[in-house]
Image (cartoon, rainbow, N blue to C red; front, side, top):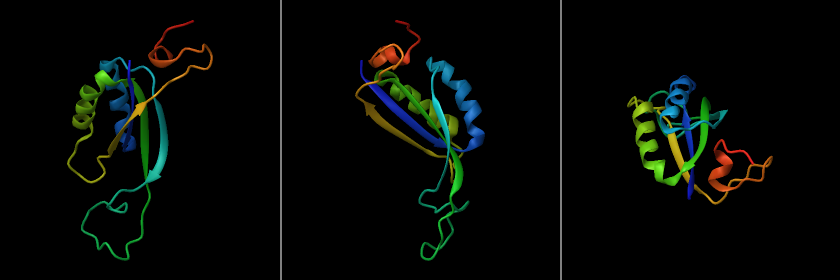
Length: 120
C-alpha cells in the first residue's frame, strides 16, 4: 500500500477544528508543531505593500503532519481545503509528498502497519 505525507501549515486557531475533523478519515495519529514563517506577502496582513524594501515579518503558524494511504489522499485534501478556506491572506499551504517507508521502532512494523493500531 502506498503512503503519502501531508503537511498543513495553518493558523493556530484552525488546529482544534481540523484535529476533530480528522476522525472522519480515521486518522488517529498526527504531529503538530509551532513554527514561524511567511509566504509571498512577507508576513503582512494585506497584499497592498511595496515589494522592494519590505522587511520580512515571521508570523506564528502551526504545522500538522499526517501520513495516510495514498488512495485516501484526494478526499482528505478536498476536505482540508474547504475546512481552512477563508479567502484571506494566511489561509495556509498544504504540502504532499510520497512516503517510501514507515517503521515503528518499538515493534519493527513497517509500512501501513506502522501507522495503524496493530500490535506485534
